[in-house]
Length: 307
Image 1 (cartoon, rainbow, N blue to C red):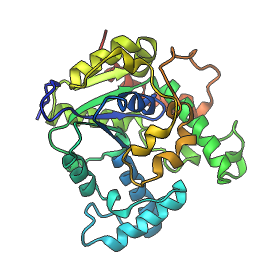
Image 2 (image 1 turned 180 degrees about the vertical axis):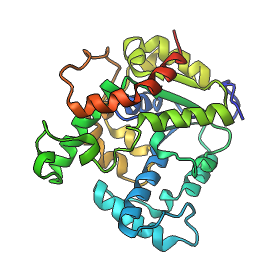
Image 3 (image 1 turned 180 degrees about the horizontal axis):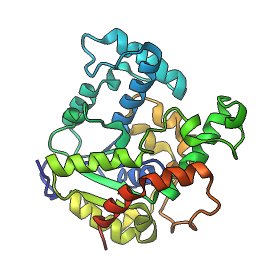
């Protein structure tokens, strides 16, 4: 099932697996400027998040198929919609529905941006056929530090933090963020990478976010060539408006627009800027988490696309 990355009459079918805060949304917005490209925004991640929230409330696992399980998935949609403060379509939360949607798209090109944490051993079977799997990584000290700041701000604005969690200095991303997975997102991404290598493609493409920021023309052109997407220099700068996001496919019709403030700069981006200075004075939770998963990042980093 390995893909050559060459363009065909049916166009390119690509999934980009990543961790949060890797400029993946900016990359999706960039590639969305390619004519005939349909963008899917984290379909597996929202199925996964809905499943976690549903189990916390009901004690049961979320059904993987919508038909025959409408009541359970309707309940899951209500829960995740209240947490994300946006409408969610219950049918789109079923893993089987995600697979079918991706396999039946009639667009020339399909690009799926998703998190490795959205896929687990028991949902690997719901990956779509004839898609090329690619990976976007970033040093965990950068990605976890940025994620911590974003989630603290988000939870604070929603009034969800109390006690030590309400103080940015004593907030702990593992203790106070119920969405934060055991593998700090990095181990989950690594597990998907290993499964793809063992079952689908022995040499999947890996790109590093800082490489992309510092050498956008070189990395982007090499990536497009590898997955079969047409590249031109016009991709190096795109419309800063969020209007293009309205056409993105997600678990809810308005989900992408409703969460645009959380993704902030990436969603309103118009080009890639050089990577910022490496973060200093990291909090204890960021240091603890990043140290735990650095070995997974290092292994994937060694296989990255070098230009």
